[in-house]
Every structure is written in C-alpha cells, then in structure tokens.
Figure 1: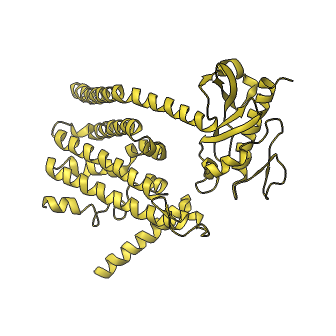
Figure 2: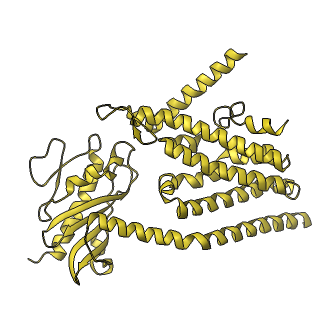
Figure 3: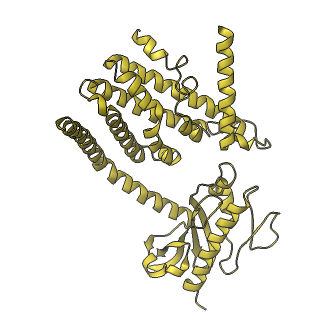
Amino acid sequence: MSLGKEFTKGIIRENPLFRLTLGLCPSLAVTTSVENGLGMGAAFSAVLLASNITIALLRKIIPDSIRIPSFIVIIATFVTLIEMIMHAFAPDLFKSLGIYIPLIVVNCVILGRAEAFASKNSLMPSIMDGLGMGLGFTLALVIISAFREILGAGTFYGIPLFGASANPALIMILPPGGFITMGIILALMNKFQHDAK
Amino acid sequence: MRKELKLGLFLLIVAGLAGLAIGYVNDITSPIIAEQIKQNKIDSFAEVYPGAEEVKDESSQYVKEEDGIVTEVNVAYKAGAPCGVIYTVEPSGYSGVVRTLVAFDIATQKITGIKVLNQTETPGLGANSEESWFADRFKDKTATQPLEVVKQEPVGDNQILAITSATITSKAVTEGVNTARQHYVDNFVQQ
C-alpha cells in the first residue's frame, strides 16, 4: 500500500471511531462542545503520532512476549508529558479537558494502532498511519460535538446561533445525547456504505 | 530463568527511560504550573473582592474542624488594616463538591461577590452556577441575614432566585454562602 493510502484510510474507510468503533468512552464524554472535541482530537493525535513513531522504531528491539506492557508504558509516558505541557502552556484547554487527558492512556485506538500497525511496519508508513488515524478521529469528534453543541446548547464553537429566545434540546449535551448522536451517525454511515455496494 | 530476567530487565529499562523523560519535562513545567495556580488564585480574589492591597491566607487562625465546609479564610488588607474577608467553601451539589469563593466587605458588611471555582454539576443546568449572572444574584446582599433560595422573582432582600432546573445546585451554593456568612458574623463582626 502506498504512503498516501496509509494516510487516507484513517479518515473514512477505517475511521477509528465510525468504522472501527474504538475509543467510544472518552469520545462520548468530551464531545459536548466543538472546542472540547478539537482539543481532545489534537491531544489524541499528538500521542498517537508519538507512540506510532516510537513503536515503529523499537519494533525489532521489543521482545514479542512483553510487547503489550512496553506499548502501554510508552503510551502512558507520552500522555503524561502532554498533560504536563498542556497544563503549563494551554491552561484553558487543560481546564476543560483535564480529567479526560489521562483517559487517552486507555484509549484503545492508540494501543490498537501500535499492535496492528506500528509494530509491523517501518517508520514512514507508521507516521502516515498515525497522522491519518489522528485526523480521522479528530474529524469524527468534531462532527459529533458540532451536532451535539448546535442542538444541545444552540451554539457552534461558543458562538450563539439562534438568539436568546431559542430553547436548545439540553439532552443532546447530556450523556444520552452522545449515544443518540453516535447511533444516528453510525446508521447513516452504514446506509451510505450499503447503497454504494 | 535467564529469559525471564532478560524480559524483566528490558521492561525495567523502558520504564526507567520513561521516568527520566517525565522527570525532565516535569522540571520544566512544574514551576510554570505552580505560578499559574498562584496567579489564578490572585485573579479570582480580585474578582470577588476588588481593590485589596494584599490578601493573606489566615486559614490556620480561623478555620476550625467544626466549621465543616469552610476550607480557607483569606483576609484582604488595605493600608495595613483588614478590610474584607474571602472564604473558600465546599458545599455538596447535585453530583459533587461546588467549590466557591465568597467575599465580605468589613466596612459595609455586605457580600462583595462570589465565584464558583470548580464544580461537576450537569452541563447546561447546574454548571451555569459558574456564570457571572448567577454570581451577581448574591452581590451586595447583607452579611447579617441568612439567604434563602426561591424559585419565583425574589421579593425579599435576602432571597436568591434559583437557576431554572438546577435548584439543588442553587441551594448548595447558597448553603456555602450562608456558612461563610455565619462564620464571618461570628469572627469578624463586633457585637
């Protein structure tokens, strides 16, 4: 497969959230506003890229029988680093994402890509895979959070859309709204894929 | 046996390197983070009690165990004399502690402002307690009278209009303010 394809596959065909349905728990938790969705996506992509690079470089050194604990240590290290850097240099973002950042450690997309891709491929394809999957995940988060923020809070990226008299459907930014949104999007994606066949 | 030792050693090296990296970045970021937390505190103090020349943490002198949800007492000074008191209270809301600052002015015996610092209430409902329009409902209330939460337009001076669909959170914040108020009356008002 070409490098370009490794990049684009994560965006639609193997979108981690919509097609592989990995990492649902942190995704549904943070997508109450577009700002949070973007922030989580950016932090996630940075960790994924860093872990893919490290694991692709170390793939011949890491013994097979303890690869999973090694991956987890590597991923957890990058998450901790990002958490500290974000706290120091982007305090507002840190405040809204705070408790979700450590969740990136257990985000199965990252471990999934390490296991399924980076540990079997060389550096360049792994970078492309990390970038594509990161972008795909971020896009998915932004789509879900735009849907929820517009319907649930009547705003987009914090900008009011409907004027003061509008009464938004609050349920959309509460946890049930996350599941409803996810269900609708997955159903639409399946329909389009089915029609295309 | 040799194989297990080798694997263990490998993990030890991986974890050691990870520890080194985290330690290095922590050295760089921790002073910035500490400075930020300090600055945030000063900013929030200025928000609830504007115009103080100096704010001193006097919790050790004023906070006693039986005070319950009062966690910090900071005294604001102007020209060397105490002019206001800023409380940190932690009442329990709908889904957790609602940490709130409450400030009183000693000269007028009124609340100069409150500010919800952090909370885990429902987004869109109780989380609105952080908004300034809710905090403004407590502004200039007198310290000598207990506050009360109402659901209709307040008629009395000591009544606070609840946030729509978030009565529990509104009551929690008011309970925090009342506790601070009582503590203030007991400790800072000469009878």
